Image (cartoon, rainbow, N blue to C red; front, side):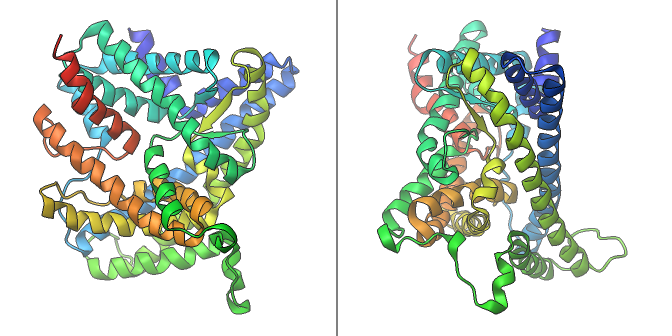
Length: 427
């Protein structure tokens, strides 16, 4: 068991190591030279680490923004945190080993489904697999499952999600990227498809459909066609206005003026986007060719399902639009859901950026600018509604004021709670 825990904590949940090893395996299967194998493996590792560094910069900046947002607008409610649920499940319920084994079961089930069915997607976002394993284990435990059966059911449910989510998202991903070389491996896909559906209904159609990427600006504003400058123009006022309402005592800024500190945090956000997109370009340059070896030998025609930031360079304006509109939707939901007896869920700025940005790409691809705007607001409401519904389930399980954000894992939890649990308890 100690070896399994080591494997989970130090290899499989470390996405950069996992993807590098897979790239190495692909190059070995293609019988590349030793130099090419070393080069391709290290460049894959470097690309993912650069991507992760960009994500870390963005996370730090958005964590600050979340603090001043709550204080500036005096909001109190539940902050979704799958990490807290994972910690409570391992420490108070003693489910650490079961979560680790369920993680492995999900990964194995994914490989088997990809090998023996027409769905050839290999889900490579390790952290997302861990959160899915946490949810299926916790809700399976409270449904009365124990031991091998708990792990087996969790592995099957999670394994189905690992191929189903990339598969149903692939038609839109294909439209965005222009190929089937890569797929989306992120457990917020139900939310992305929800936005795409709203965009399909209310968005632009046919010749009237205009992408946010094709927006034409007056000459004086042509500089906004630069991705990073356009992000800066949006984020700097957003940070400064929020900091103004929060006041100088909201966050400890040392000797620095609080507005100047907020300005620099906004710039840090843009720096994070720059670093992240640089890592994406480096990663894709290596992982796609290396993955062909696996596709040819182990899982014929396999498609790597990668984390959502990989797709940001394909539609950068839609990412920013998706972030803004999703945030608007979460704010609307935050105030309206308590009116119908549900918990107040505070907007999570990290989810709003990464999930909202990806949803914006979907909305724009399906319904153009109008689809991305209307769909983005609806997406924000939707990804707040599901965690609010989950609060009720968690309260009955003894997890007070707890919920999660990634809507696919929330959907898996509600599947257990509403459907599987009553069935299991009959036997």
